[in-house]
Image (cartoon, rainbow, N blue to C red; front, top):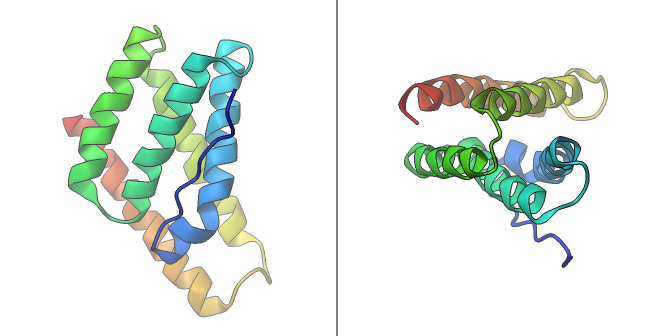
Length: 130
């Protein structure tokens, strides 16, 4: 399989968390499909694009990408609850990183925390409409 492409983001939290999110999401889909498969790669790629737009506060694009992700998951017979569980785990892992002392300044941690709260809130709104 070809190497995965990661497009880097513009917001601070999106910039430092994107590789972490990508690794987590791809691993989650590989677990669902029993390894690195075309389905795990396709869903992982879509899910990463969704998170990039979510963290960059591009809600309209994120809604569209969420819908496309859920359609692709349905084709692979992957329940919405699994996609939701991956999202919850991504939020949890980002929060764990934010809570580690000494990794960033207090101001950066505060700003990233507020961005994560906003992303979680937006995710909830998107789940209602997507």
